Length: 150
Image (cartoon, rainbow, N blue to C red; front, side, top):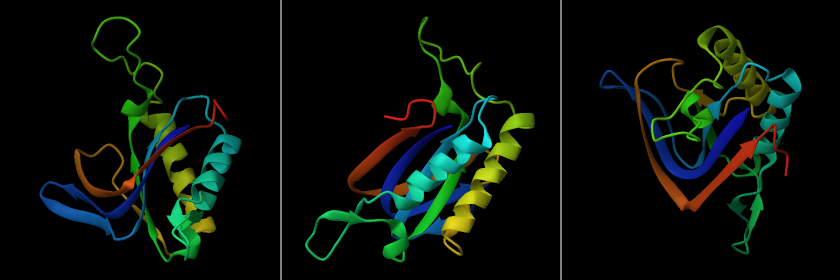
């Protein structure tokens, strides 16, 4: 699993001109899956996201996780995170999980995040043509890859 984490002041998902999910201060998670992602991958990423200390404490130091700030999390499925551009300029998405695998992985990941941050999770709609707007705070953007646990 690969995730791009952005600390945001606000973020909104719009589908067919209708805002379907919105958060204020918090984290936008763009989540991409591959066929061999396991429950362990999902748990590891969910744990990292929920405990990621990227919010300022009273001294202005990034030392707090979203759980201690009252912030929310917006999770968006994003198969293009697994784009390959080794040959040419047209991305290949061959490594990205297809819907039959990705939907259960996405739903399981959301469930894991909800168990770690109850009441704070909002989502997009898997497979929908989504417009995602955000105001990146910082900017703070972090990439997490369960297959490359640096």
